[in-house]
Image 1 (cartoon, rainbow, N blue to C red):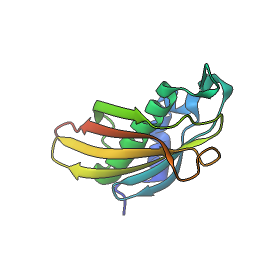
Image 2: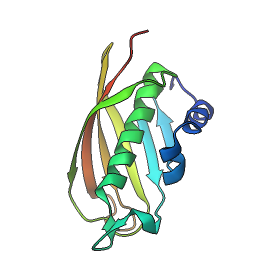
Image 3: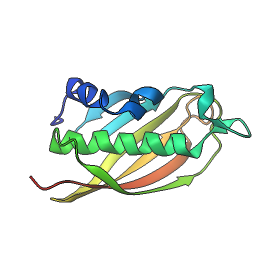
Image 4: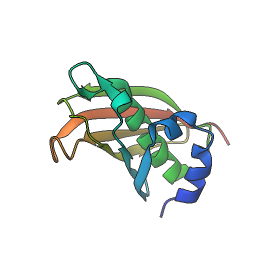
Length: 139
């Protein structure tokens, strides 16, 4: 069972203007896992008609934030220390989804991976893969 609720995450999101602006939606919340959707808007497109890298990076970062909080509870000052992403395929102009899972949780650092999919464009084949490290503040 997650140590944070969807209601608590919604309260935190009120202070995260970029999450609200992007319309990020938590589809599933588990213990150390999260599934998050980035609804498509034309402002996310880059030349060539594909979803921009910064949009996918924001999705990956937020999915990891949710997964970390699912394990440590409402520790809002947990922050990204590293995000590495590989873009594998061009997602078409459509919603994209992140599937995140923590791989290691320590006292000060959390490390996980995020697979990003474009169900309308590539089905189950990922369009990007990210690894993300979060710093957890001391109690």
